[in-house]
Image 1 (cartoon, helix red, strand yellow):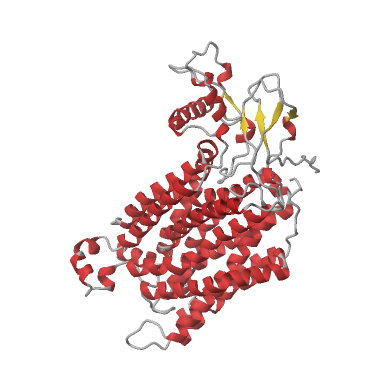
Image 2: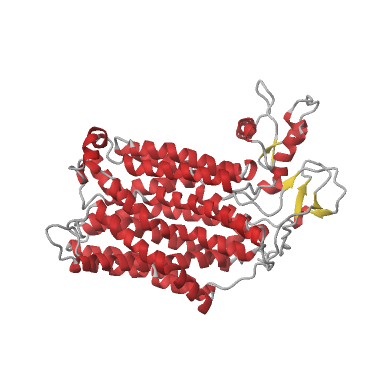
Length: 589
């Protein structure tokens, strides 16, 4: 079966105008407009670089905040589950802690499509600011939870109302205005926040969790001991709320809206739009046209107002603002993924009276899941990212569980776990840039990708060796050799993980033209969210099974077996990366 190739559409300096409401026209009108977009190889001016850097740094703060919201729970998720569940112990708490950690990613997966529609219609900043506002509320509610079920629900809602990652990735590319050098620089800075977050996020949350138990003689803790005893996990989540507030200020002050004004719809109309879509959906499900108010027919999943005759002059359909803001069917038909967020460089609005040159609508290139499935190289790129997302999230959940286990692990407190992750973060911060640039410049993107895959997740097989190095004294949780060994292993894992993620992102983006890149990133984020939701649950089950009597062997051997599983999965990502081929961004799926 051969597919007829679809011509690539890559017009950063043009707008696509869709006349889909006309019953006699199937063409798309193209109108040239002046833009300030930079060329691929054009050097930006110092002023443009400064403005781009300001906006990029604001996005870095936002993604750092998202990193804190996601991973700050790792050091104390096991202790939280133990405090809520009487039967939970350090050895069997893994699966319960895994559900707490993964529920945020499950919530994000469920809402990604809706957030994408909102971002494509009402703007990127609206989604960022709304996500940050909701994150403030649900972070505090999670910290105030008094039962395991409440904690799961609040964490799920924290992810359900959060679209920071996908929107930030969209903005950092759009802010470059087509310039590859600025885009590469911006993407590198933003993605590196994931590694930088491990410098202080786990340590800070570990230090602040359960202060009454950790610092019983502290004067401030004693003053608020009643409140802190009732809500032992509120302080780490208060920090998350503060970081969200700082991010809101940065976004408002420094980040421009990148969705074109001619398709930017007022937020005040969101409820009326929601009502229209619900009526359309109900009409489609009930297969009838009328209730007390006639239901309008659905065309390509949208309410078709064109069939309604004699509309009053004040009807929304007669408003030019309404038509300008309501995205065309051709545009919205390919926003099926979690990050519909990232729109194409062109925009779609209705301009039936345009005198510009017409373009056949069938030439408009739309990327679908079927296209990805049939394009083997593109599918393998996404599989590499999805598989590594599963492995990385599993390792991030498994490591603290190994540390708190008294039988199979080190029996550490939240503070000690946070200190290990923080020192590894310092190693990461000092070495990451030089290692990344050195490997990419010397070996190229794809060789660097394979080096990153081989030197990241497979390295965690050495983590259980720390139990033989931990000849701790009576006054400390962990000995210095074991502490330095674990910090070094985790730092190496994080440095090469960042290399893998950055290079597979660059390689994937270059397989499609710019007009398809946004949709592709949406499918990538959707699969990654599912993998990151499954990862903590999978890791919790593996740890609980291997550390308890599931294997019928000593817990220490179970620790080696469990991290061996994660290493083999990481090696699987390396094997998939060997099949990847370099692509040309001018190619079309």
